[in-house]
Length: 391
Figure 1: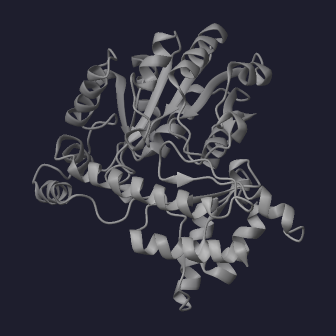
Figure 2: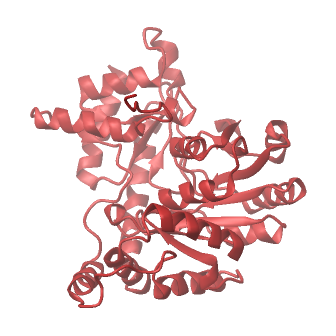
């Protein structure tokens, strides 16, 4: 019998949209692309130089440890210790990107039918990865009125005896919301009582605009919650294509994830690991420069949306490089448009602006737009967008 593909999941919505954008650009269309989940420009020069040296090294071509290069694991552990965590290299597993760390964690920890709480709006990959690992996603809807923050009450309402994990993204993709320490403590205490492990996605952690008094992982753990931290170099150091992430967890969890990784890819790319270590150890001015750029663009975005409050409901993001405005006011004026996905299609076709519809994140009245573009290009995109809304 011929093998047929099982309908277990579907293409990432941003991947599909970016493919459509590339088609239009190839046809000669001038498109302002606000879908990007990556900073502009190449990684810092010292990172690229470290990669070149690693590629030329005579002893760098063979297999490496499944959990990652010891030097990189030790650096991640030392950074965690500096933040107040009691961790060593045995707590760290390096993976082929933060997405791989999440998937390997779900594969290692979930039995068939185990539940994972995912506050929404949320990055779609969480749900798809849970299902591919044999678990079930239990969404926890939040609203803009509460800053898109999950609460103990909301988690309790969705809890059942089969729940094993809770996924938190701080700062949040797509909303840009940052969970306040008080809320984190409440959630951590609830997880401790319920025996639920927190998977804390902190890949945007260095791109928070809220002054941090205590690291999120430390707050959760001090409240008694077992916490697995997922992070990486993609977003902070413009290294999305280098695919290096990691997780920090209790040694038994780290060992289980290492076993999974050893059967999937054996270990992450060695050259990219060396480059990641150079990024983490090296000059951090490029990160500071990226933050300044994002803050300036965030101000531009706020001014643009403030000019059309009757069409767009905008809450200023507290972190990441995404905004997640609600187009509900516009939709009420345009009954011919069923949801923000229709607005996004119209923006692309008529105004030449690409944004990500919010339906795939669990919020059909919203769109996600990235503000990483160079200032001039971003201003042009905003002018096109606001002009289309007013039209």
